[in-house]
Amino acid sequence: MTYDLPPELIVESDGPIRTVVINRPGDLNAVNKDLHWALANVWRQLAADRDAAVVVLTGAGRAFSAGGDLNWITSFLDDPVARDESVREGAEIIDEMLRFPLPVIAAVNGPAVGLGCSMAVLCDVVLMSEKAHFADPHVAVGLVAGDGGAAFWPLLTPILRSREYLYTGDKIPAAVAVEIGLATRTTAPDELLPTAHALAGRFAAQPSEALRSTKRIVNMHLSQALSGPLQAGFAAEVATMQSDEHRDKLLALGGTAARR
Image 1 (cartoon, rainbow, N blue to C red):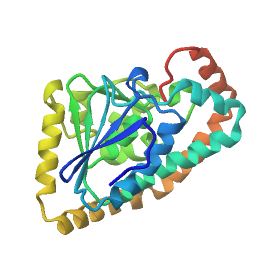
Image 2: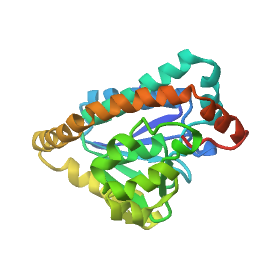
Image 3: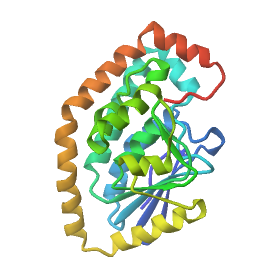
Image 4: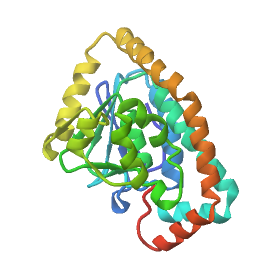
C-alpha cells in the first residue's frame, strides 16, 4: 500500500509490521504544521492497509518528539484560524489513536515531550529507552495540558504522582515513567527497536479478530472516561492560547525549541 504522507512522517513495511517514524531528526522531531497533519491522518491510512497487523511508533535520530515547533506555535499568536485548526487537528490525533483497531507499540527512543508524550502513552505498549524521558510542560508556557496530559494521565497513574509533573513540566525519567504507570518497561537503547519489533511479531501472530476486539473493549474504558475531560481540556487550552501569560512565555523562548 502507498501512503499519502509528507516526508515528516514515514511508514516502513516489514511483513505485517508497519513502523511509523517521526522524521524531523534535525529538529528533534518537533511537530510542525505538516507533521501535525500527518499524525492526524496516518491512522486511517494504516487501518486501510489490509496487510498490516501491528504498528510500531518511534522517532528518527535521538528524540521521539520534542513537542511543538516554536515557529509554528508562535504563528498562532496572530493567526486564530491556524490556532483553531491546530486544536481541531490535535483532537483528531487523540480520537484516531483511541479508535485505531490495530495494536500500537511505542518505541520511545529519546525525549517525548508535550504532544509526543501524549501520543506515546496512548499506545497499547510503551517501551522506553533507559535514556528517554517524558515531559508535559504546557503549564510552564502558560497553557492548559489539553492535548492529553491533564485528561488521561490520571487514568494511568496515581493522581498524586502525576500532578507534580503536570504542574511543573519536569522531566519524567524512563524508570519513573514505568514506576508510575506511564510506560510498560525500559530497555537498553540499542535493544529498543529489536524488542519492539519482536513484540510486534508476537502480536502479528495472534488471532487477529480476537486481538482487535480485545483492544476495542479495553479502549472503550478510556474513550468513555475521556469524553468530558478531553473536551474541557481542549477548550481550556484554546482559552490559554489567547492569554497574555502564554504570549509572554512563548516570546521569551526566542530561538529555543518550544516544548509543547
